[in-house]
Image 1: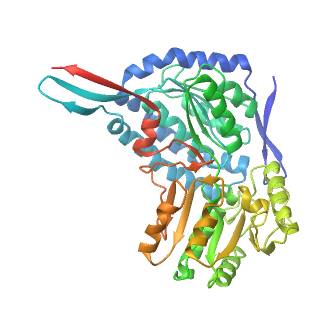
Image 2: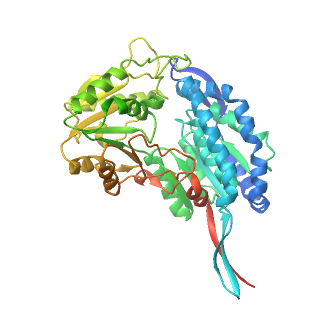
Image 3: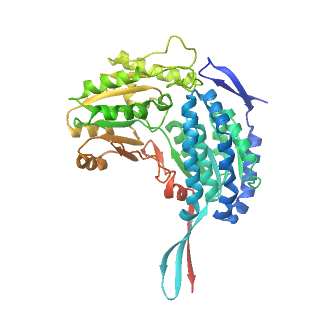
Length: 458
């Protein structure tokens, strides 16, 4: 049986372990079991489903140290970030459990002396759920738990970069009291994901690259089934001249370099008023150069490795293209000389032009592009000069100005100054090539259902 090998990108790609790659017959069997279980799972009702799912929260939290270490070993995320992620996820899990019944409850639309009309939210059926490696537990939780609460059965595939984390999740899920067939997992690369999507599923839920998301959307179109897609991003952050630079530098750093810059919703293009451009560049450079790039299992490490050599190779090719075309490296721009693995120094690039790949493509790594602007209109045009539309930020003391700009920026979420849209009650998703549909919040639950109108005679 073919094995999917897990390697540690922060320790020169040493082998961590392996799992068997799922065969086509295994995928078909698990989908068939999910189809068989969907009616029972649906008819249990939301409250009973939540009752069965709830023990999973304490089970996962009791194993958070083990899970965090495994994530760090597989994708190079600093151990402190892995632990923080899981602690943060606990709040999302609780919110889903506490609010699912409310947001999936029937709604009355009309009533008179003869009849009452209402909307009921019913599950779609079997969900093929495919998630990425950059936040291995977060994306599992955000995808699978709301689907289960909504009444869909799930066949889950995690990224080939973190199969042991996927196996860990499956083992916890299999110890639960969920009925047979309600949750199953398959293993492999994109080929396995494509095979799963082509089976008798009723919904495709995907987080990952735009390229893969569009391919899955084509499959869904041929099958005439629904998709929820959260894909790439190249978020702009606009910084106006009236800001207090010292107050915002740390937030800009975090919003770009968290998880070694491998975040779809990260700031990837910093658009700064020309009057404070040099100061912003100087302050960011000084902050970045205080950060420790090292083995992510070291608790003092600020920035670990990229998740895989292919990520490193892609990032290097994007930066090299920019340098050839005239971009200037302010700091970083290379691998650290004393570390073996998928490491890349946190990098600032200026003198960036629109014909450079670091501007036109999503950069999934610790590289920040900084460009100046003169007028508000120019800032808006630069912000929208991307095929993506996931998120954006505006830093501006004049809040009225910032509020007027919101409708002019093509993005699914906009943070103003210290605002942060990352709450479980807020829907998450983007415009353009960043996807379709929303996850989280009331809207996220309802994306996973189909509406039925009932008109009942009194």
